[in-house]
Length: 333
Length: 165
Image (tube, rainbow over all chains, first blue to last red):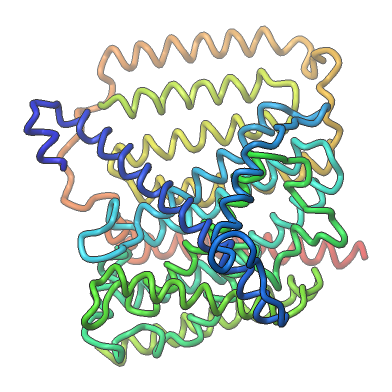
């Protein structure tokens, strides 16, 4: 494609820009389709767990329910509350969506199937996840609503606390692979299931999944939007398409975190017989299913328990894991 | 230098203007954030990817979140200041003079090529490996001293909070 563009006599920088736009569009379409699938999957899994059928009217097995919901959301009126800081209010969903798209830049879907395999991919991931907090704070503050403000403060406290164990496990993964490039992390796990990082890094894997669920606002940790106490948290005032963008970003964060767990600990896009990209999606959706299972089984935890879990359990575990990884790498030679 | 650098530079200056021009504190913080992110882009464009990303993690991810936190809690009122209040009467014109002198000096320095032409540096300069080697081999003593300083600050905070409650 790139060569073809250059072949038409186009300058190199213009070809780069066109390729960048195309790749971003592919990621956005992929995220939108994934969100449609995930919404249906979430409702079906929740239905199974609560011993009810879930959506089953529209289309075979309720398949088209999500489309109907999406059309409803897009056609709703777009309300900006009076007294809101309009520019910040409009900017917040864009920032969170841009951050969730930007995360996909470094994730390898398969051999040579990655937007840009940065040589500092792990640090890049840590940097871009930090942007989410700002979007929540922007949304909560600009709405001029106390529920939004309290919800966004909770979000910020939660995300900042759980980012630390998350990044510490990333450091351990980098030590194991001897590189910060995600392609090298996948390459270090080639050659069968015994080489997956999940075995030497079992503590890291558990910490990563728990902290990742908190980062993605998944069910037992979805305090920022605790409906029973906060109406809906930071996005209370948002409606229609802007609300849909927050919703989309939330599912995008869920799938990005599952894809990262796959890449870091479960060998990434590698496996026998089937093509790599199929393996990538099988593993990613397996992780997503487990998080939904956990989420719909456990009740929402209290805010002080959440903070204690983060600071007194996950961070010490992540530090122990870091020390153990150092010893392991030394011993392995 | 590419178009990306020019756009980032313009955005950085625009953010800087926004910091002092906006009436609402939260908007000032967001403008400052724009400046810092544009600087990160400039760092990355200069080949210092590590510094650029650390800039985003430390400033955008940590310091700015703290700022927004404090400001939106302290002045949650969404009202701009009624009229511009001069907090430093009499100092404004001297600030203008100082800024003008500094601008002239900068332009003269730029025109006279005060800085030597960039020397060719080794491959991978500014990358994580080179950065880590400089930090943990050459300057390890300074690093430890800085760590000690930060720890003293943390202990001080804990003592202050414990005394108050």
